[in-house]
Image (cartoon, rainbow, N blue to C red; front, side, top):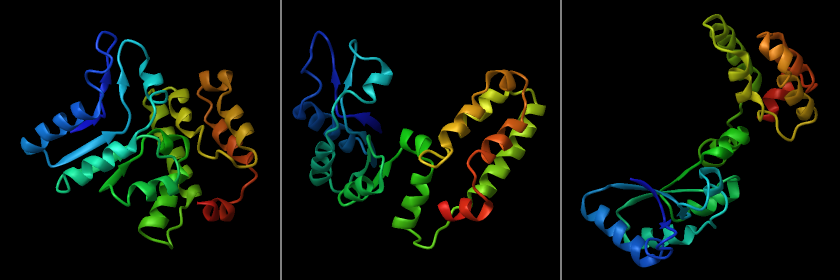
Length: 205
């Protein structure tokens, strides 16, 4: 089961978002035999916020997940929401069985490799150059199949956030004229703007 901690309705603002409602809900799914709960630790506001706003505006309440885990220790609990760094992940894993990461992995791709090193293999090194090279090969096959270049480059835009040259990297990948022309060479040009050679790419992982 994946859910939030509750919902807020215009006509019944508090009816389905307090602790009593959450406890009844979790009790019902646990008694029904649900073995695992994925909990996004914030309420959803229906009729007042957009889906995008619902991902940020309602405050996070991970303590509700921790309370559920204490009450139902045999229920596997995976916490979700606002996990954007390794410290937060480690903090939640002190009581949760797992964590779920969504947008942070998209906007900070190297977060997953940092977690791999911290949680599983301290010697893990990410070969970013090899990954980019494989993706360039994939882009070529997709272009040949009729996919538009802008649908492929958008997934690279956050790849080097925080690095020198990252802004120029994004600018080149966002060149409307070249995107419309399916000019794949703009990817190589964008990488050149980072001024990184292969070894630096690998060490940066």
